Image 1: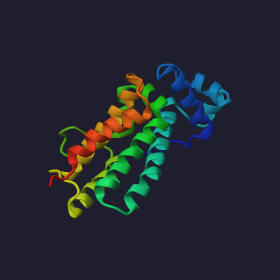
Image 2: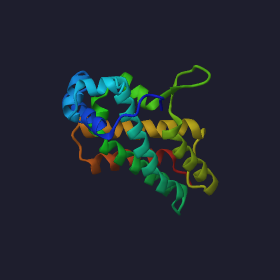
Image 3: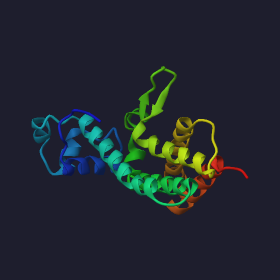
Image 4: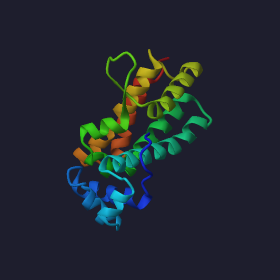
Length: 196
């Protein structure tokens, strides 16, 4: 994601703890250093800013997602079943990072998930998050289990529909992980399922 200095795992964990406990505004370098068990000067000597630490949190989320989604891409079965598996995995990764994701501001969410599109029509979800879903959609068009108009756009809609709605139902409505996942996936999968 960036050419920023490498942020050691214990500092990333310290930042995650502060974000989860008190939110983005409270995630000062002083608070992060205390939570990580290092001095504020140590962060300064390493060239770490709040922004580089937030980028490291985003990189960790991205790596967790990329690793978790792989089985859905290579498993056997029709694309509809594999897409369901991928969206369940998306919910699982969101669950693992729920505390941090809820603490981030809209701008910070944008830094994690969005990139500008080439024609300037608006922000797109970064390819690392949507390309696996796009691949499954294309597989579904080929095997007849999924139907949609535009694979790239549908993948973006699915990723955002599932991720944002799942997090909102968990954090905003207090639903269990199982209930939120089942409800969101039922709507998402039905929306792209091929009709007989």
